Image (cartoon, rainbow, N blue to C red; front, side):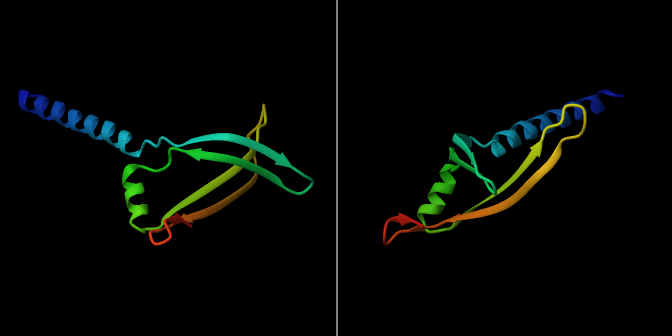
Length: 108
């Protein structure tokens, strides 16, 4: 391998590393689940929680200008087995849309 090939390889590795680190920062979400309360009755399992840190500054600006913001939640519950594969008990996908009404100064 000659000197030019080594320089090109190092440059390529540096670019890949920079892109990898930048992508991690771009897609990193500061979302946090808090106040988790699990309730059940004979037929239903209810989970109440609060999600904090979801909106980025760009999302806040877009929402305040009237653009609807849609969240999709995919929830899967598994039964954990010690000596075998985990078993899927239930799964659901639900969506929630938030839109800001500037005339009423409220979200709906």
